[in-house]
Structure formats: C-alpha cells, structure tokens
Image 1 (cartoon, one colour):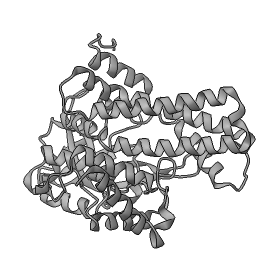
Image 2 (spheres, rainbow, N blue to C red):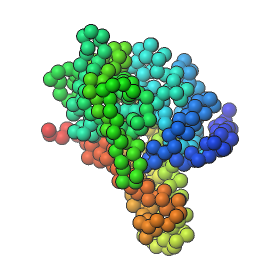
Image 3 (tube, helix red, strand yellow):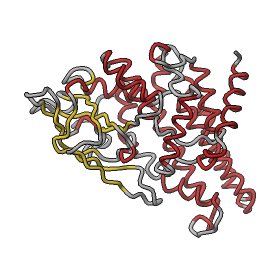
Image 4 (cartoon, helix red, strand yellow):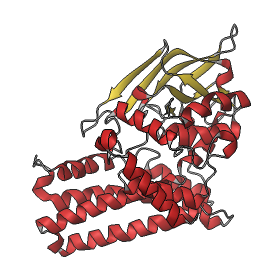
Length: 387
C-alpha cells in the first residue's frame, strides 16, 4: 500500500468515527485542556483500539501492527489534521510500553502491554519532585523492600503528574539504596494508584484546568514483580524512557502547531492585524520555524549514526518549546484587546489558553537552562557545569 493510500485510509476512518458520540472530542484534550471530557476520551481510546490504531509501531509479537516510521508519521499527521483529541493512553502506549519491551520481564509484558493496547488501563509518569524538577537525579522519594513480602514500599512526593487523577497506574523512579546520591541507587517501579498510601491532589492552572497533580506516597506498595530492571538500574531505565518520549508523535504535535498558526493567521486577516508589517514578519518567522522543526524531527527519526542526527534529538525540545512560547505571544498580540476580554468567540478562548499554557513550555520536560546544559555537555562535549 502506498503512503498516500494509507493516508486516505486514516482520514476516512477518522471521518467515520470522530463523529456522532465522539464529535465533541474534536481538537479537545491537548495541552492546557488535558482534563477535558475524560470519560468520553477513555471510550475514544477503546474505539481507536478496536480499529487497531493503538500500538501501530509496536512489533507484531506484542500485538502491534509493526508499521514503518513513514507510516507512523502519516498516522500522527492525519490524526492531528482530523482534530483527534489528546490521547489518554499516550504515556502508557508511547513511553512505558517501549520501556517494558526493552527492559521488562516476560510476565511484565504479558500483564501490562495488552490492557495498554486495548485502551483499558492508563498510566502516568512519576518523575518530577518539588526539589527535583528538571534535575531528575536529585529525587528524594524513597523505596524500601518489605522483607516479609518482597514488595517495595514507597514514600515521598511527585509533582506535575499529568492526568494522575484519571490514571490506573504510575511508574516511579525512587531512591532504593540508603545514602546513595545523584543517579546512583535508583529503582524503577510500577505502582497501582488505587491503594492506601497514595493521595492525589490537583494543581489548578491559570487557564482554569487541572490536568496536573501532586501525588503523595506514604508506604504505598509496589508488588515485588513490578520492578523494571534491577534495583540500582533506575537511572538507566528512566533515561531510556525519555528517549522514547521524543519519537514519532512529535510529527503529530507539529500538525497541531500548524493548526494553531493557521488560526492566528485567520484572525489576523479578519481584524486587520495582518496589515502590520511587524505581525506579518512574526507570522513568517513562525512558519519558517515550523518547517525547520519538521526537518529536525525527520533527522531525529533517521536510522543512521550521523553525530549531527544525534544532536538534533538533544536540541529538539529547546527549539519547539521556545518556538511555541513565541507563538503564544503572537496569538495575544494578534488578538489585541480581544485577548483579554470575553468576546464569546471560541477561537479567542482557544488562543488565550494557548498563551497561558505556553508560558510553561520552556519549564516542563526540562527547563531551557537544563536543555542548554544537555546540548553543551552531551552534544558538543563541553566540560560539565561545576557543582
């Protein structure tokens, strides 16, 4: 099947299924709107699974379709083009599942991969902490082994945990060796969220949503067979998982960016802002930045050993987050007074939310300062920053 035929198949499926009951989900549930319509989005995940649109890049041995990189890129682009909602299953399907395929035991794969693929169990990520946001090696959450059962008892706090209040499980990086520091002595654990010893507190955002949470652990239990890898290997596994985070779905993310830029351009033409040379210049720069971003993402996905391709993956987050933050500013400048007034136009509401959320783009997932350190030290081989 040619890529264009496959693209048409996806677009046709989305037209047939993202309608009726699921029509309200179009363009919902993305950044800044992540807690929207949760029950309907859970049902949408099962709808995708029934159409075999989950795990499309997974190997067939794990129930996936084993699609090529090019085919996966086409799917994510068409999904975004059709207004597909934010994926409730993204963290399980795109982050945890590849990690389990690489490091998990046979029983772990058999237990956790099928319900992720079927859209029946949802996951969140327990990395950030109040004193260890971008500096993951500084975590303080601790895990001690129960000598009677072999289970691991976890105490501490994770923060900015996306969709924890809607998830079934959480994977947690914790400190399992007393006296260990930095990246040493960590463990990667899988914990059910509905158990005594776990409290989830929503964090209300400036835009009104609460898709992030603080998660508190007080001797919460991870079963003995829910350690991924070995105690002490937590850092290696956590870093491997972050590598999966910057994968093919970035092309779908860019499709969403295109839609945002198109909306800004539409409003600029309507309200006369497009007549301002400075605005036109900024719109043009945003379009150029998007094209550069696509080029970077395709190089990241290239199957090669070119050092320049490896460097693309290190600088990609810095590039897109700063670009998106500037897009949020552009949206407000284009709207003018409509950006701070209640106009009744849902397009204004959407762009206002874009502005609010993009303030955090250069913070979550690694601050600008951390990203520049990574580029300098890992990409360019420069000396590490003194501590």
